Image 1 (cartoon, rainbow, N blue to C red):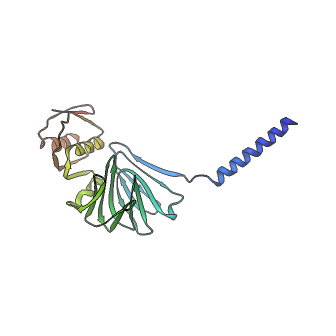
Image 2: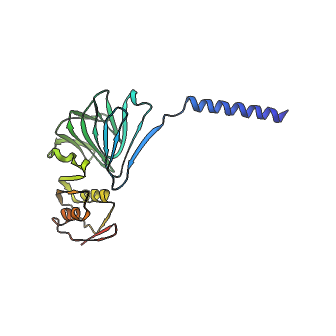
Image 3: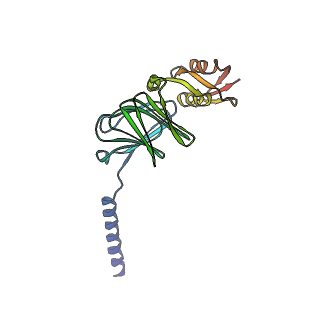
Length: 229
């Protein structure tokens, strides 16, 4: 009798547990990752287009999409948002919101920046808010966002594999080289100089020449390791 009673209780428990999990099941989260050396194109449920830079991740809840277009980004991405309800990109403590526009969000480590190419963008963090229109950017300096004019509207050309730098620290340019080509650059001195130039992701040797020759560096390639000298 005790054995049958135990089985009855266990079956009831399993039934209630399954019912609870069915009713309160957490909505599935879709995740897209673009590995080192790859730029990935993603179409969202509303038709908005995302270009995900190498070493970046984009997540969103598909089941809740109609209740609010919200995505979570770690890395860098270009967005072409179709008009509709508010579209938000959450990156750490910052939320970038639009209705329909094209813009970049770049969030890595302690770096955060937003570049607006068309329409308008609103960036919020607690009690801080910055609004951008086409041709403006916001870049984090220290603990606050600074708004400035986009000095080169062609900056979005990275989505086709062209990386332009109008005024970037050399170490950040090297980070992008490593990200796009899957290489490890060693031997970079404590160099705080600013780089102005470009490279294309379809030719490693040409890219290394364009970045390092003007800065006075020579280099040697051994597999996926590039040693500067």
